[in-house]
Image (cartoon, rainbow, N blue to C red; front, side, top):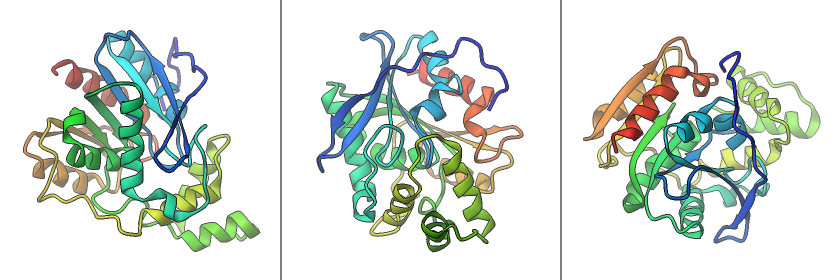
Length: 265
């Protein structure tokens, strides 16, 4: 994250939308009602505040003339945090976002997502293509989200305090504990739910809208993200210098590229 970002946007109280499954989804709104809407969807173990407000995204987007609709995905932020893996399938996460757009009476949006939010965004752009006119997908994995997370090790840590031995899993646990209010058991349920009946991004059936892919130069998935961009008919790619998977959302290069990309639409 950038060390100092002046004039950060104030965080409003959440407005709740009820999902099809009866769960509360926290939403946040900034900007002029008549401006083009950007839907911002955060990554795993993050939140709208953490991914988009504290990093300057909402500030920069509203300054550029956009309205910003932020969401805490199920299991995150001020949204409900069920502990059942069955609550977190990809179709449910896609459906939550479509329900949010319906509730706000928004037909079509620009979409920006990071990591898990980018993976969900790919699916929204394919399954509900009429709802997304262009999208920025940052740090998108080429496979199932959170596939490298050792769920049993993380659960043993959450329930018993057993030290985590796997380095990647420890990184995810550290990420989860960094954000106040996170529920590690809910996040592990999400990680498990992503593995049941969820397809990898299908490069033979990519989104057809203009898509800007962005991944950090130090991110292990850099080449896989490039491959997804290459497979997307209207895809383009920007590499974020000196950024890894966990600090890329704070990149000025990322924000600037996204604002310019959305301003073309």
